[in-house]
Structure formats: structure tokens, C-alpha cells
Image (cartoon, rainbow, N blue to C red; front, side, top):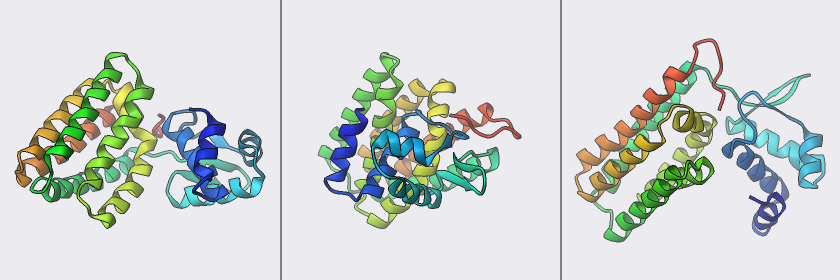
Length: 229
């Protein structure tokens, strides 16, 4: 992604601190910076061609969102998670996805099912090319779109905040854990369960997908070593 162009696109509808925040999020999501990496106001201000003020505001917002850690006299770091924190996040997400399945299955339309199947085809193409940068954003959008389809704005708000934190470790579970192929097979099972209109089946499949993702991640974690994406 062209940093300058993407920033200009965001600026058309967002404030400067919001644009800087979105760019730092992109760096985290695309793996350019990982858990434990240090970020500096001066470097980011120079890279984005802005003053330090918007960068400072973006740092504070991202700390509140659970993505950064501000440490006095040491600086700003991308947040690291231990095994317990990761487990807690997966447990909460599993509950949310289970709820999504119950809400969406009885009301999902044929057009929405077709849209989700198209996502799966695109992710299959990316995985066959061993293209994590093509797969990962589509994977994020696929799950986000499923929650959008429920029409429940509060559920979507809670889900997105949770997922912001989970992005710190999801790339590892997909790629370092070798889960990219089985993950997309599970996506197909999820969509077919939603298409069946059966809320029990759909809720079970969505929950199982999350728990399988957790199972793929946890063996990669050391109890005493933070998650590194």
C-alpha cells in the first residue's frame, strides 16, 4: 500500500490524528511493526510528513484501544500479550461469534451467502499463491462482514474493538502455525452453516472456528515469552 496515497484518502473524511492512527494500525495489521517494537513520534512524524502532535494523539488513542503501551521514560511500544491474555480474548470472541451465528443464520440472504463465498474464493487464491498479504486483509474483512450482516451496530462496535487487540497475534496463528489452509476450509463450513438457516448449527460452527484458531496459536506461545507476530 502506498503510504502517502492511503493517508490522503483517509484525510478526505477524517481528522489528521485519525489518519495517523489509521496508518499506525495498517503498519501493525500488515506486520511492518510487531509486538514489542518501539515506535517514536519523530520517526512517524517524518514518515507521514506531519507534526508530532497528531502522532502523540494517535498514540494515546491506540493505547486506549489496547494496541500500544506507553511507558514513562522508555517510550511507546506495540503491545505484547502473554498466554493468559490471549486465552481471554479468544474466549470472549468465541462467545461473540456464537451470538453472531444465532442472529444471522435465520435472516441471511442468498446475496449475502454469495458474497461470503466470493471472499472464500479470493482467500483460496491468495493461499494457493502463498500470499499472506493478500490473504490476511480479506480474512479480516470476511469476519467483519459477517458481523455487519447481523445489522446489530452495538455488536459490531464491540466486535471491532476486540478484533483490534486480536490482530496483534492473528497473523502468527494463520501463518507461523500453518493454519491458513485449514482456516479457509473452516470458513466454507461456516458459510454453509449460515446458509442452512439453522441458528444452532451456525453458532456452533462459528464458535468452533474461533476455538480451533486458539488451538493453533497456543502451541506457539511460551508461558514466559510474549506473543511475537
